[in-house]
Image (cartoon, rainbow, N blue to C red; front, side, top):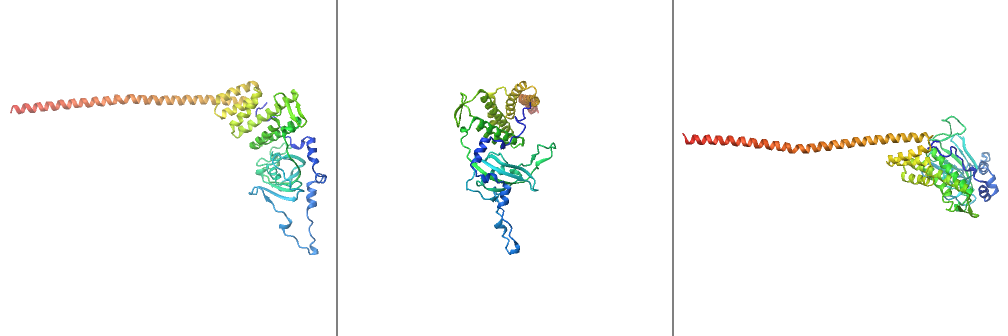
Length: 411
């Protein structure tokens, strides 16, 4: 088992939302709006060209074509109304909406298409650009949204899962996508606590898988956003006594259900810690991984990631201790073994550098001490020399004076 692999190797989209919720959302939408495809509506609503032979003048482009709204003011996200909505009602953050949409490249190739797709606004369950545009649409509106690669699939594009060619992409890198989208219906999220255990578990895990999708694309901030939303559905769902509030009242969960919820939460916290580690949010990552180790002290993946966090924070010895424990728990994980070897070599190198630095500092201290001792000796030698020269000069002067006195007294 690879400690860095996510708990799910495939991405499950939100089109598999439970039928009960889909039916509830659809029941509030007029039948004609639900059954009419986006393309048919746009064709029916399109004005017919006037017959030039009858002398009718062609309208100005400004009158026949609605203008694009530059949502961000820099041309990277444009929106144009194709069909006006049936009301002024617009979705707000966290509202649950049903949309029908298709996305095409500049050459007309359709790369995305969904009918009655359930999306929670601001939870990046579709590309960012389309997610942002939904809050500017009225219920029942059909719009064209042009999404620059920056708010679409970026430099990576999207790989076709049916293709074995690693280079081939369904959406090529740096591609602009034009979406035709119909906002079918809007519904408030409501209190999470009023949902059933099965509903909360399902939605929470779908958001976790969406977070995994962004992780694989190295969109770490979007992954963190998805994981945090997942925890809102999976966290604090059960009291200490194994009871849970739902729309039907207080429900007692079975041991299996309790264990399933625990496992789901641990997966989210583990992946959240990895995403936070990737953006150097070490303190946040430490808190996330500690949630796992508090419930599962022998979780090898959590131990490994906590070791990575400690190493990033400069505690190499603490990291080695955790990775050694993780390696014992999962002896087949080569990534843990490899990282542990790197840390041990790093620790030895740090110890050697520390020893060299200590010896260098000690050598400098000894030289300074030696210099300090030599200075007085030198000063004493110089003083002795001066004294000796003074004595000699004094003796010579005394002798010369004696000779002069003798000659003076005996002319």
